[in-house]
Image 1: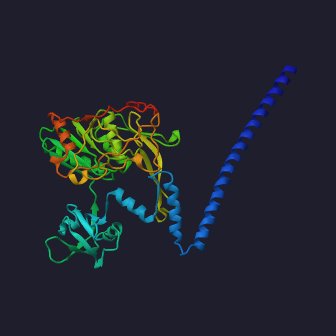
Image 2: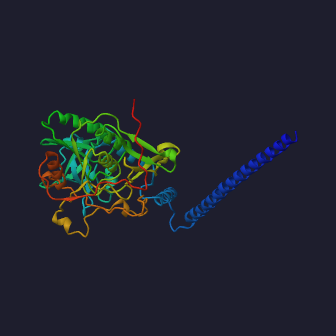
Image 3: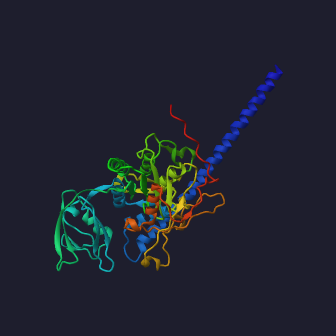
Length: 461
C-alpha cells in the first residue's frame, strides 16, 4: 500500500514539473513575441512621426498617396531587386502583360532619341496598325491632335491603348513624305504572340520571347502545324535568348512539352511545407527528336527553368553563353480591397533544377559556349556584357557551398539575319550532323553539394 502511495506521489510531482515547465516555456514564448511586437510598434510610431513631420513642415505640400507609395516601395526594395509594390495602375498593367492581350493598335514602339517623339519599331501582323499601313521607322508626333513631345514613352503607350472599338488619330512623319499626315485607327484586341516558329530547311526553329498565358498553347499549335510541312525533320531549335521570363506555370508547361517524365523544377520557400515539385507528364510534342536550346545573358527566370530542366534530363544540348541567373520566384499578392489597392510582388521561394542546382546569382552554363561576334559599333563600347543577377544591388545570394561561384553577365546580342547568327548556325549544324566550328566547351553541369537533389517521383500505376 505504501509503495503504491509513493508511486502516486512521485507521478504527481513529475506531472506537476512538466506542467510548470510547459507554463514557463509558453510564458517565455509569449514574452518573446510581445517583445518583438513592441519593437515593431515603436518603429511604426517612428514612421508615423516622420510622416506627420513631412506633411506639416515640408517646403511644398506633399502628395499623401505618393508618400505612402514610396514608403511601401522602399520597404520592399530593401528586400531584393524583384520585390516591389504595384499601385493600382501598375497592377493592371502587369495583368495585361501576363494575359498577353489588350485593347490597342498593335505596334511595337520606342522613344526617338533627341526628338521626344515615338518611333515605330514594327507593326504586329494582322493588327489595326498593320492594316492601316503603319511602317517601321514611322514617327508618331501627335495623338488625337495633341503633341507627344513632353510625354514619357509609358504615357504615350497608355494613350494609344484603350477600349476595343474606339478610334484614335495618329499624326505620322515618314521618310520620303514631305508633310506629316493623319492615320485614323480603331482599337482592337491585340494578342501578344510570345511564340514565333518557322522552318529552317529540315529543322523547326522556335523563338519564345516571353512566358505569358498564351505561350504553351501557341507553342503546341505552331509546332503541330509545322510538323506537317517539314520533310525529313532533323530536330528543333528552341531559342530562349533575350527572354526575361514570365509565368512559372508556363515555364513548367513548356518544359513538359519536351519531356515524357521526371522532375521539371523544385521550388523551396521558407518552410518545408512550402516546398513544391513539378513533374512532367507523358507526351513529347517533338516525338523524341533532337533539341538544341539557345541561351544568352538575357535569358532569365522562366527561361532558365526550361533550359535547366532539359539540360539535366539530357533532353537537349544547351548552346550559347551563360544565362542571367534569376533563380527566385515572385508571388503577386493582391492587397485588401482588390485591384483598387494594388498588390505586392514578393519573393517567396527559390527554384532548383531537377538535379538540385540553384540558379540564383549563378545562371545556367551552356553545354557548349558559342560567343556571338559583335558588330563594330558595339565592339567599341567599354563592355558588351549584360548585367547579371549577381551584379544587382541587394540580390539574394547564391547557394554554393563555399559561397563562391556567382556568375558574371554575358552578351545579349543576336543578329537579325539568321546567316550571321553564329549560335543559331552552330545549332543547325549540330542537328544536321555537319562538321562543327571550333568552340569552347563548358563544364558539364554539376549538382550543387549545398542543395540536396530532389528524390525521384513515385511511378504512376
